[in-house]
Image 1 (cartoon, rainbow over the protein chains, first blue to last red):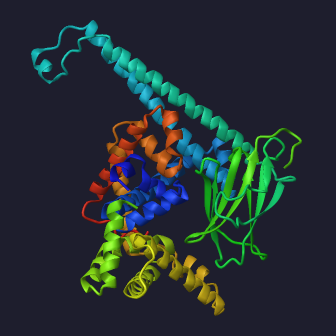
Image 2 (cartoon, one colour; image 1 turned 90 degrees about the vertical axis):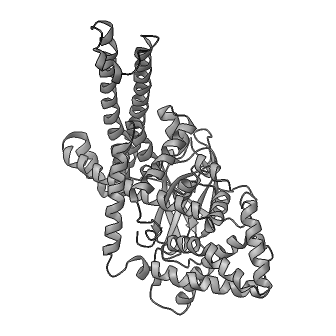
Image 3 (cartoon, chains in turn purple, blue; image 1 turned 60 degrees about the vertical axis):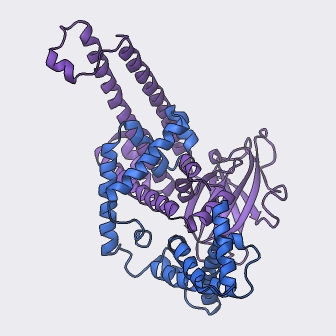
Length: 292
Length: 196
C-alpha cells in the first residue's frame, strides 16, 4: 500500500471506523503490522477520534442543560431508548452545533462585507497603516464578490443541514412509534464464498413496515456477545453496533428501520474478534403489495 | 500487500527456515509493535494481549523453522491469523472446560473505572483535542472532524453537504491528525492502545 494513497483516502481512519470493505481492511491490517508509519497513523487517529467523541459528548451534555424546554427537552427525555438517544446526539452534533457555527460564520461574513465596502467612502489610510495592510486589490469589487460567494456557499450548507434535521426528525418520529406487526425474517448464514449465490431472502421496500426484524441463526455461538454490521449494496457499512448477546437458541434478532435499507444485495455481518458469519439478503424497490 | 512488504516477509521466512537466528530477531523487531497493537484492539485486554503476543511469535517461529509457509510473502497475514486463532482457541478451550463465562469476566472487570494511567492519558488527549479545535482555521473544518469522527458519516456525504472537494477534505483530516500528534508531544500514542 502506498502511503500517499492511504492518506488521500483516509484508509487508517476508515479502518478504525469500520468503513473499509473486508478485503481492503485485511490488506491494510497486514501492511500496518510491519509499518511504523501506519501504526502512528492508526494510533493518532484512534486518539483523535476518542478525544473528539468525549469533547462532543461534553458539548452535547451542555446543550442538554441549556435546552431544557420545548422540543429539545422532549427529545432529550427519549434518551431512555438507545435509538432515540442516538438520534438526539446526531441532531445535536450534526445539526445544532454546525448550524450555530454557520450562523456565526454568516455574521462574520456580513462584517467582512461591511469592512470591504468602507475603503470606497473613507479617506486613504495613513502611511504607517499602509505598511502593515494588505496591498490594494487590482479589482476593488473582488473582495465583495468573494465574500458574497462564501456567504452563498455557507447558506447552501445551512440549507443542507436543515434538510438533514428534517430527515432526522422524520426518523425520530418513526422511532417513537410502537412496533406493530414488524416484518420478521429468519436468515441463515452464508455457506458459499461471498457473492457466490443469490440471497434467497428478499425484502420489498414498498410493502415492508417501518421496522424489519432479522433473526440471525448462529451456528454454535462460542462467545457471549458479538458485534454486528449492516453492509449495503455499495459495500459500505451503513450501521454497526457492539456487544449483542445471542438468545437461548443461539439466535441474534435485530430490528432495522426500513429507512436504513437500500435496494440491492445487503449483508448483516456477525463479528467477533474476526468475522464470524455473513447473512445476505436482497432489498428490492418493488411495488406495494409485493413479496415481503 | 505492497511489493516491499512481500519481499521483506519472504526473505525473513527463507532465512529463518535456513536457521538464521538474526532473522528471527528481525522478524520480532519488525512485527512486534504492530502485532501488539492489533492484539490489544482484538482483545481489549492488555494483559491477555501481552500473553498472546508472546505465544503468537512462538507458534510462528516454530512453523517457520519447521514446515514453513505455503505463501511466505504473506507472513504478516499468517501472524495475524495465528494471533486470532490463539485468541479464539483460548475462548473455546475455556468454554469446553466449562469455566464460567470467561468473556463476561473480560468484558466486565472488577473495577470498570479507568486506571490512573488511562485517566492521565485521556486528559492529555482531551487537552490536545481542545487545542486542536481552537486552532482550526474555519468552523467548517471543525464540522468536518465532528461529522467524520463522531457522527461517523462517510466522506462522500460530508463533501456533498459542505460542497468540499475530496482533496480539501483529505487535507483537513491529514493536518488535524498531524497536529494532534504534535500536541501530544513526547507522550507516544503507542502505550495508549492498551489502556484506552
